[in-house]
Length: 250
Image (cartoon, rainbow, N blue to C red; front, side, top):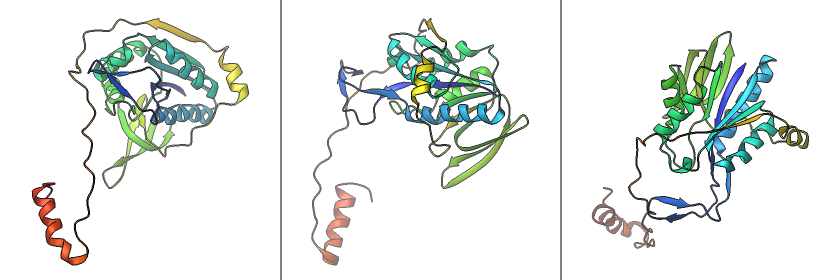
């Protein structure tokens, strides 16, 4: 089983971010980590290789030179090789352009699975995985919580509004991975030491003209403090009035 797993370096979800120049986040003092949803994709790639008893896992990241840290983490978990598509402009690149860069990097390579996290927690766009699959002409199953591969067919369960949907697709196939698909492993000391000897290729990439441009970025307005409107049944008319005329939700 040959898998290519795509990962992204993102700000930690506990980080208090700041906006600089009105269109981007200030990276100073920000703690970065492997995108949490990508961790499920990495684990699935490793499990599928182990289940098949053969194959290879290639980790690919489009980012700055600092993304080597996250790629080393994936190598320490058990991936066989890594590829860094390096550009200092990567954090500002839109999802559509990112997808085209990733697709160009793996076009022509042999693979059974393309694995992505269902979204990156910094932009929450859900679009890169399906876009890469479209550009490469392979089927894509998104938000997957269960995978079974039999012969040349992927049987997957994915989350939908109010339930689950079971679908199947032929290999090669792209999968975007959701929480609950598996339990990501931690890198052990042996894996950390072995990662330093595994191949990691770095390619400098040129960024094409962006398909999407961020015009401005700002924090949402602070919510006003809540207030108590009376007590018991007598407060119902005042509550309804506030919801209708102030909050305008009725």
